Image (cartoon, rainbow, N blue to C red; front, side):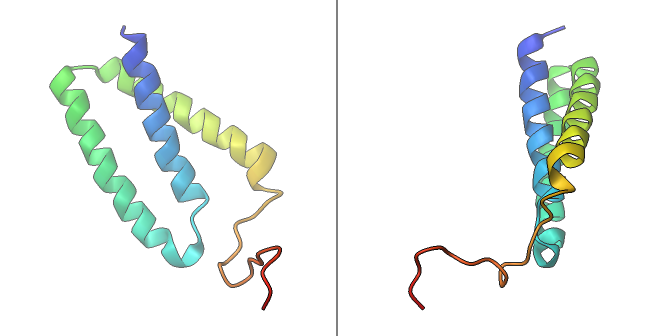
Length: 92
């Protein structure tokens, strides 16, 4: 088992899941389509390098990390729409 590829895949998959989780509701469809395209690139890489075991373990690690982020941080800090965000120090 190649630990370097495992970590690399876990980081990329975690980042994709994190982007979907924290996307604004209006832009979530675009983010999901982009994540699917990146996921297809990862799938092709996995088949090219023949690292199926590392990919499955990386997927499990990514899901556990994102679930932990959601349970400890995401539930208490929901995603707001871009109209509700106020910039501190902006003189309007």
